[in-house]
Image (tube, rainbow, N blue to C red; front, side, top):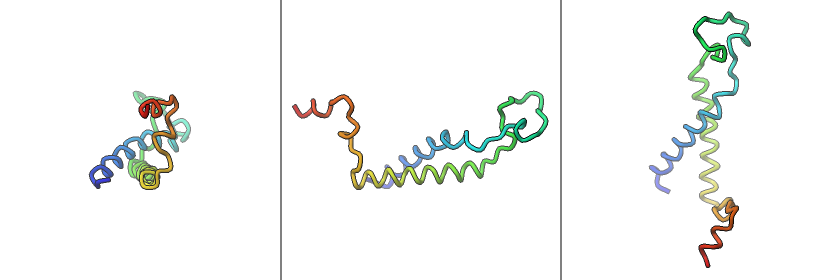
Length: 93
């Protein structure tokens, strides 16, 4: 695999990981014991720490990307393994 392809795939994993990581560890103002600020959503986070979230996203994305690369190299899971409807068998006929 070319390094540009690997970089593009890593960026996709990073983008996907943002949505995996964002809901975890978020405390609303009510949960933190603060006063609600009029005009903000009640579900808004009390403190948004972009650096901490970026670090968590990078760790998760890197782990997923390493697993993807190992699978690409060793072939643990192939398209034939996830063919639920037998379409791969129909192509060989």
